[in-house]
Image 1 (cartoon, rainbow, N blue to C red):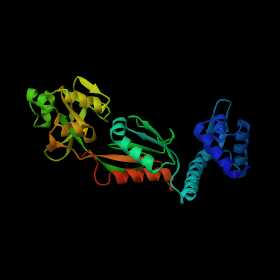
Image 2: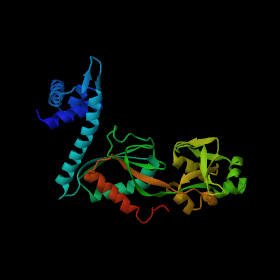
Image 3: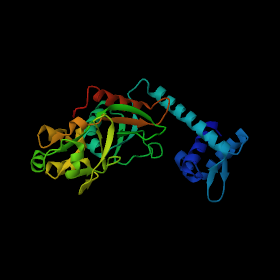
Image 4: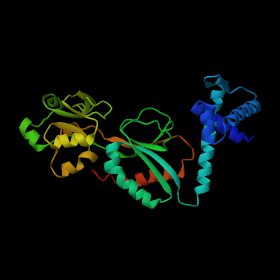
Length: 300
């Protein structure tokens, strides 16, 4: 039995928790899967997996071996992919996660242009406002806006994303224009619940420090486009990324307010697993977006 095959089976067993699922991933029988693990343990002279009738679990040395061999196999696969594709255009499947509103309004044109430029890459793009687990859910990369959680993923910044406070001219003529962030307490706020802390809007105070101001309102939506429509319908004040509000601002359906308190922009990031040799298709897509946004985003 090939040692590399034994190592791949061990990694699959650790990730999937059963011989049957691991065998399915490697397209072999469950019996063969068990034999591969036994052969690996014999070669190393240690027990890697504790087996019971109901579950599998790594021994202490097995866990340590898994963490090391997983990185080795990832690097080997990435290197193999890089060498095979060095002389030709990137190819293969690229699985991407992107936020719904940004994906539909801003990313879609880039996806179309990228697909034309790289016809051998198959795109599988999932639009979701949920923070997916890139590795466990099988994504090659994810696009995220805003503060990033601590993780082992590598983050590459693509561009800035400003978030501004807006209202319609008619609403402001009826209810007055806030000149200080404390004035928001007297207004109807339309809240986008997709923000990390939707009921606290961050602003710079007079000392230049970020202050989270508590807001509330009867309209709460988990979609920025719906918040935009509500604000355009004179229903209150909202806070949105400029890529959502750009057209409404241009057509003067909405106006920006409290700009003197605007916080520094958020970032748009591409997140991907920490492989030394990034897959050629992923690298091509990230480089494509960096070039697309290099001179500033179209919506600013």
